[in-house]
Amino acid sequence: MEQSTRTRRGTLKVSENVIITITKNAAYEVSGVSSIANKAFSVSSLLRSKVDSSDVNVVMLDGVAKISMSIIVKSGYNILNVCEQIQEKVKAAVQTMTGVTVSKVNVSVIDVDFADKVEA
Image (tube, rainbow, N blue to C red):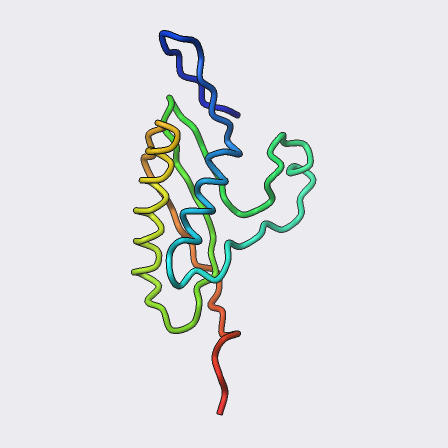
């Protein structure tokens, strides 16, 4: 799926993969993000043209994007603050870089990463 926009000079097309890449990069800029969770394998993912297997989903409706993603947060960070920062950064980055309006950025926290925690 791609978003098309007509301009005086021609047509501009933005692939869903571009929006996914921008979303992932913006999310990783937020302190406290350990990783973006991966999807479980499914046959339907093989049939889609999307090459990215991360759990970032972009739904386009009338030229407006709704983005959903699942993350793993590092131990010691406030989950609510991390999620709010992701929402702000992702929305701003996608809108600035592509011109596509973002209506929602849904963030699900599926785990906490305690790997850096030092045990006594």
